[in-house]
Image (cartoon, rainbow, N blue to C red; front, side, top):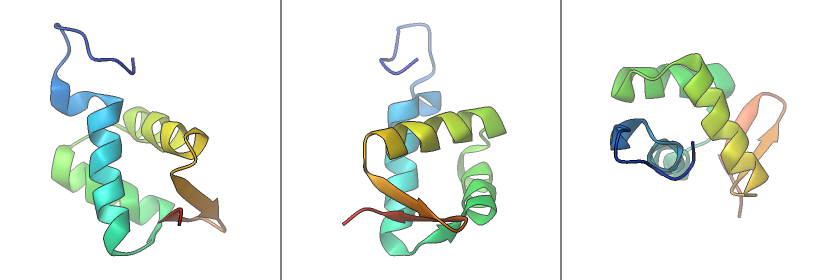
Amino acid sequence: MLIPSKHEKLERNSLVLGADILSLLKRKSYNVEDLFQEMKHLKSISIDQYYYTITFLWLSELINFSHHHIAVKK
């Protein structure tokens, strides 16, 4: 769910995870798998949460995806 409810842990919300992903991507572009491993290490998220968040960021036109690399859209 995009808007956090009172029963949801805020650190697991797509908006918060998206902000964390964007902060990593501002430093450098990542391979899809490398970014997942980095997020898994930092936040211990599941693969489903990761792909939901990446899809949300892509639909919001905040990131570019090309040839298995993800970068912040300029």
